[in-house]
Image (cartoon, rainbow, N blue to C red; front, top):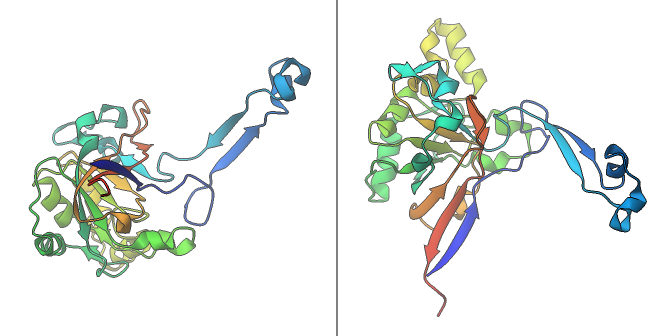
Length: 254
């Protein structure tokens, strides 16, 4: 057997698909000697080691949201920050759930998930990492990426968590429906239950979500692979960047 790794992450960069800017200040190899109180000739080839200062949010690029992101309390106890998420949650069998038929702005239902899994003859097991496949990553690099995607609902999120999911991923800008869709419904109805219902379910039962996944179409099958999604250990914060990788075991070539 040989092991193939599939990168399910988007790059961290400034561009139209991010709602907030990414600012990078570079101390290059030529300028670094002076910053260290030295001269270029003090280094081989006149080059010191470089450095970069990056300003961005914890929700930039592919990232994991911890229970603390949803509220101060989860399941009746203080919500865990990202550095408190159990590592076991972040390395587990994955299952791709195909909901590409759900239009942008529409909520993904529990029935959508059930139907997709039934088509694959797969039953969720506790600890599985479901990856919600909307196809929205094809818009990465455009402004439409932030707005043209469906989203999870409270019902569909609960359906997964109640079956043992602790981490749920999606290949879209956000986990819930786009902000404009939720805001339009709220202004029309006055019902604040339409605002981030999937996120806020995390106040009832702890779970983490991965946002801005990519390349789910490169997975060779809907299941039979492992997901590694360890978040950066940002102490006491509600989210952190994650390099999400699918690990696929394949037979050696004859």
